[in-house]
Image (cartoon, rainbow, N blue to C red; front, side, top):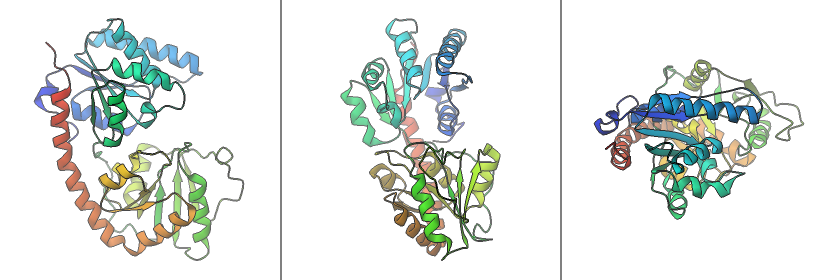
Length: 333
């Protein structure tokens, strides 16, 4: 699936892609299906945010009169809003929900998901393991992994110059084994000082239960702009992106493939199946993470070759997935 090159079937439809957050998957998926992306955001308390964004969403739909509305879940509130408008016949166009793991199994409000699914013409999920859950709710479903994103930065000529650099792509969310990564840094600090680990995102040390000193070989980058993130991605030695969620494929893996950087990922079935080259797989423990960092350094040349091969394979399979998606999206009468 090549961003910006939708099939003719999708291109001829007037489509919008609505999300209440900024995330790379929304951008690449919207480009791939030929939809106009609308990233609606509002800074305020939860009640005000939901009210303002709901009004903006309804106004957007009325103005654009789309043939197809694609929307991201989560937000569960956005998904429920689209389903409510559909159930009341206030919108008559096709609705396609892009359900992330937290959209399929949200921590709160899970009772709403089957109702939302039944009011979607189609549900997109990121991998095949999630499809049966949607089908069991009465939905039509297709799995579409993230399109390989287009990055501005070029891959560095020598990513091991100045030491071996590990980039932990992190949002400080509950499903990320952050303290285990920091323990791994402690294990490596004395014996392998040339290995440096950077953790992206705004630090929340107390929230994740870290009360020790930050290891000297570990950097907390804070918030990074897209440009700064891509620069670090392009020059790191290996990307580390981990989750404790079952059946979850992380965005950092797709970004690593785009930059042709080897990966250390969580050992869950859809991840191992999809990212089957150029990656090592961790059980998310500190000891495993430390050992795999050392393996990635020892096998770096091989892993770089493999991830380049994987990039070519995934780029070809994306085009096939897009063709199948175009056949399932209802067309205007």
